[in-house]
Amino acid sequence: MKIYNVEIPADLEIPELSAKDIAELEALHDEIVRDREEQAARLAKSPFRDYQFEFAGTTTVEIRPPSVNVDAMRKMPPRLRAIFVYAHREHITY
Image (cartoon, rainbow, N blue to C red):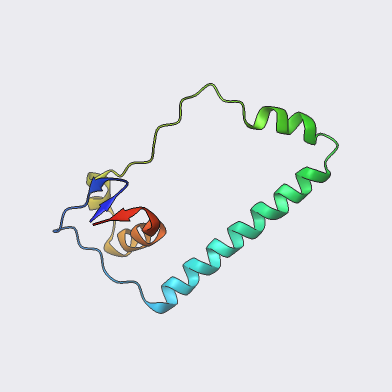
């Protein structure tokens, strides 16, 4: 398995998440999406929106592509590894 094109060693234990864990993660994701939508709506109504939008896309820092640190994953508890893998499931290849 690879995440962001980084090979995840087969000896790295990644347990299955329970249906309850997955439901909690999905609920958290939905809440984050709602919060971002509400924030965007508030910003759209703000008298400072033009100023904020002007600088929102301006960056002088080069953004590196996502990666995975396997050594850091080894230090995580197995359940946290499983949550990490679930959260990045769209970026997994085999």
